[in-house]
Length: 350
Ligand code: SF4
Image (cartoon, rainbow, N blue to C red; front, side, top):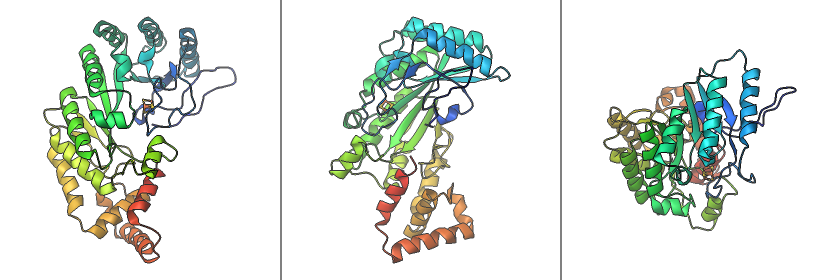
């Protein structure tokens, strides 16, 4: 997710919220809601201090036409509805907004939104169908985990049951679905359950796209408190890769596109299509795991200091030696425990 400034111009004005998925970088952004209707997840500060509100339909429609005037020479293929949950709107209001959007931007082929499972399951299948038919044909789902225990621990406010039900509604209506999973979200204690239940739920849903994120604990969050007082033990970089290996191994019978596009992930080359690339994903993780400890540390440090993008970059001897010098300096000058340094470098990336 990327921060955006509230958008205002001298004579044409329309609102923009603080976030959008990275894949919506070139999309038209229209704000239907402000903030998140839940806003309690232990790891999240996205909408900290922002009270959730559904924007008045007339304001949204005014924004759509203002955007049309502002982007008069620009054609958009896609539009993302900000902020946290457009499905919180009354169905008729959402349909009104979608119809206006298609009228103002007839070239749009994709309209997308975040949708919370608990909100979407309040809509009937017929309402979901009408919403999809009106153009909202892509859903971003922050599932994070398929484990009830992990979801409870993180105060996600959703259950595997509601995730499955909302996904079925969305898919039956014809919506495409991108599902986000957070590696390490169960910590050490719930790692096995996190992997097993997440794989099981993804196998049931078979989302169009799965996007992997690696947990980095934001300072000041409830999760950070849990780490500080010993209630949550985060996974190391290597342990998160083991989790990912197990997750991939247990994903069966799906046709999802699978991606590690976010820079917070260690192996950004793990991108492809299930089931075709499953074995190649596992081989890539195996390759890392079979490297000696020094090279593993060299790669992790190189990733976290932006020297490397993929494992292949270690073949660049100049880059490898630069990272190796940093690694030796940390070890010789006893600058701290290497795992702690990796942890805080990861924190700085969010
Ligand atoms: S539902 Fe999403 S946006 Fe809302 S608090 Fe949880 S993670 Fe943050």
